[in-house]
Image (cartoon, rainbow, N blue to C red; front, top):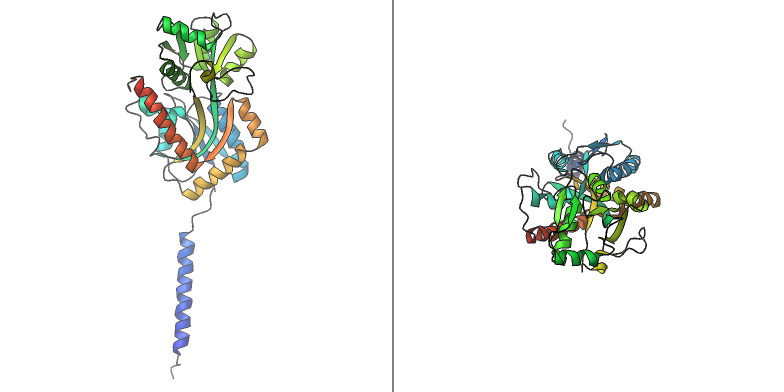
Amino acid sequence: MTPRIRPTMLAALALSLVGALNGVGHAQAQPAAWPTKPIKYVVPFSPGGVSDGVARLVAQHLSDRLGQPVIIDNRPGVSGIVGTQAVARAPADGYTIMGGTITTHAVNPFFNKNLGYDPVKDFAPVNLVGMVSNVLVVPEGSRFNSVAQVIAELKAKPDSLTYGTAGPGTSQHLSGQLFQNITHTRMRQIVYKGGSQAIVDLVGGQIDMVFETVAAARPMIDGKRVKVLGVTAARRLPSLTGVPTLSEAGAPNFEMQSWQGVFAPAGTPKPVVDRLAREIAAIVAMPEVQEKLRGLGVEPDGRTSEAFTAFQQSEIAKWGKVIKDAAIQAE
């Protein structure tokens, strides 16, 4: 005799089966645990610079917090373009991140027609680690003792003075260009393969001035081989007591700071980006990390994804206008 199944039993069985199937679907929809293998941290500049130092500091602590090695991969070349292109093309799986700067992620498009990547569309901003200020330095034996004297000389004799840079789009170049825009003066840019060679020539008297990062200029400042006329930040720097901002010294509203941030390839899962952003923000907030960042000439920041995205877009707009006003053409 065939057992009789009551309608209520059928309903219960159906609900149980639906629940089981939903459970399977839910389990399948869950993303795999992350991270389960080492993470590559690309630095698009040479070892030993500020970007490299920041990356190694962050990577050390990030590895501890994530429980996986975070491996530095230096890929220098062409104002950071080589390494940045590589990350733009990397799988968006959370296992490749990079150290991005004002050069790689704000101004390179204005200097290169065939950049090979889009700094906005191809990346997910993770964390703005910190800001980097420059200083306007002249040789110790220079006749200039103030920014006002430099401006007066350039007003009287346009193009009579030179400033050294590490190439188009670098913080030295942008600082010099903004200075000329604001003061309505002209001076000649002397391009070097690296900022260190510009400093050597500055000390030797071959060029008149350099807008160099604090970290790079510090040994020459401490050794009294150069004079500091002003800082490019909006506020005075505690590490340079008595040195005015360029805005205070004669270039009204001057503010130029390069920056160090972390980016992932566009399309990286949002939970992964959010986790990275939180962990790096926590790292940047650590007193010992802040001390080491400042030793590199980096003022800690720590803004995460959304705020960093807005900041990046504002930087692109700001420097796009400066470059356009200067009639600089992309190569």
